[in-house]
Length: 397
Image 1 (tube, rainbow, N blue to C red):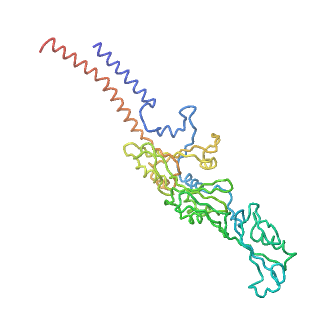
Image 2 (image 1 turned 90 degrees about the vertical axis):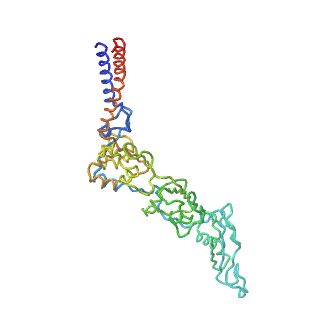
Image 3 (image 1 turned 30 degrees about the vertical axis):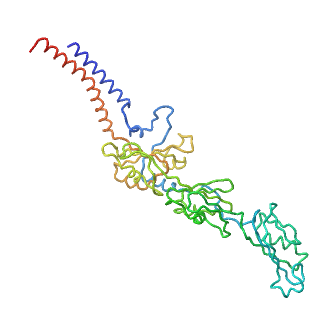
């Protein structure tokens, strides 16, 4: 009896320790409990602070107003008039008002008109072109009308009411480059009438993919701005003008989100669309696991700007960073929340987490207790059976 009592006492101690460990969150799990997330209590002093926002119609309204993607590049002005540059090939035609002048002889009646066409010439490395009797005329950085006026001014004291027409024959500067994930990468002369980003991409044959995972980077004067291709299509204000010497780089970078916890599947998922809602994201991740998930504990992790967080009622004074970590809580036990989940859009690199139901954690604990109890009971039963067998051998039947 003494031995059995000691064994039972040992089993009780082990069982108590096991329950204590379970109470200290030592059981395996896929993430924090719903209570831990909703409490906003840091695990330790080094934990990142965050704000919990329970999704309702007011929150959805704020996100709808502030969630549009816009071009960050400030220059939305149409391109200025095209100007000559070094290497451009130009033609110059000079007119005089009457015969007997500098270029039109007295016997000009045999000529087809009162003008002379100079051979085409290239703007030299100094930015000039050469005109007889006018010398070197500055062309670089000037418009055709400005060069025409400069030629007329240089000849007015020698020719009879001279006029000049300057035309761009071969445009080798003021070019626009479109490259990357397009069907026909191209470098083409800028259109004097002006073009938008979508026009430039169209010249290059359009994007290779369907566009929902395509991004467009515009480089201008050493600065860059990048927007999703879809924002140029669905938000026309983002389809800004391209300027001479711009570079448009089109590349593919799938928009993704990550799903953890009690969903049907876990991992990284592509949008495969320009926009998807929280409801669609949950569906892409296989929905909620009926045996594990707590429908009231669906959480969306993302960073929001301070002003947006303040509009949703977050106490931003607790945070020092311009981007505030926000955890949105969707309570799917409320039937109306499904409507709200279709209005909130997933953003690139969002994290979607679904916590286990409290009953699941209790079941894990009971299973763990049974495992420990069985482990302790097995040697007891084995010892008891061994003692009974030895007693039977000694005493006989």
